[in-house]
Image (cartoon, rainbow over all chains, first blue to last red):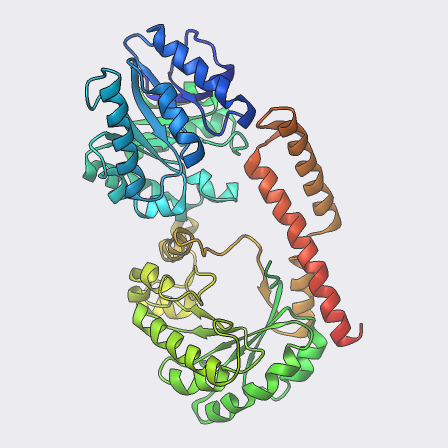
Length: 228
Length: 278
């Protein structure tokens, strides 16, 4: 049982022994030129059944030009869930749920298998969080990245934004989904040292998060320690 | 891009406003009809606005006038003239207040030959109710271009918070300012990072303008960041290591903003130099 989920670019990823759940990325970590290759990697991985019991998670693109191809590539047996970023309105999730249902049906996947984890990395998304996470029964987690909301890394730790984390835990629990913290969704994230990972992870644990999502492999150990 | 580095505030009744304006190199003049003008002087102060506007704005500076909440109709009538940039509406507590102000401004713009929608509104949030309804207030009119933060003095009176940092250096107004900023950002009109400061005399204004203008070295560094990122992107990468840190699309976008803002500052300074003959 792991408390961390590491998002890794699907185009450069290879299966190996890890102490974290992995989410294969088709979004920000993948260059536009490499998205087709990234989709192929995920499709092949799913088709070989290599996900095993842990299953496979994928972060898709939210933009209309990319989402259809992403879903087409990943909604196969073995996929446990999709992370969807930059959600701003409940309608986004309703639409997504509908698209997933159609593909599950076409491909013989039991209806409702594919879950949705909502990444709230926009201000509007956070404001409307309660409606967003209740927009589909597929939603099973809410992830808030405060540092990803602000242009200024210093505000990540400012007390005035602490309440956003606390609020996200309340909203998630009230809606019946898991609150997940974020130890940085941006590669340029400040505070990439062991001490910061430890402090952030302990705080997240105290606030009631069920686990942590990150793009930084260096954060995984601190997360697992804090939550065990 | 908006350039509001140095702001000179004045009671609109101050007879030396124009002298101070000429001396100050301000990007913006904040004229108060509210708390800094004693009630007996408010009518005369209001009547000056129309004639001050063309002088103050000749160098491209903006003018903001803070009206009185109880005198909003008279004050707005005194403000809607060519050259006015923004009307600041204090002590907002409901979207309807902003909607009423918007309607009046629209009618007066039409009557006075000002392009519809020119004059902006800034709502002031200074009470518990204002904080509670900040999202609705911020969404109440397209004239509101930026929103966030609370006015410390009156908000403290309303909430009973004290105006000093508390135990553990905690800001008692932290939640209030964060919530209002967040409402603005959720609506896409949050205050951007490009700041400015009040200068209470012309010397201070000059310091503010200098302080908030990106330095040459900042601009050079920003250019280096943008070039490094663009190079990496052209090579099929989504990030690049640079001086011990990582540049991704977010860092590159912020650097580009610095470059654009420096450009906007230079243009503004050129405009002002033509006005003051410096």
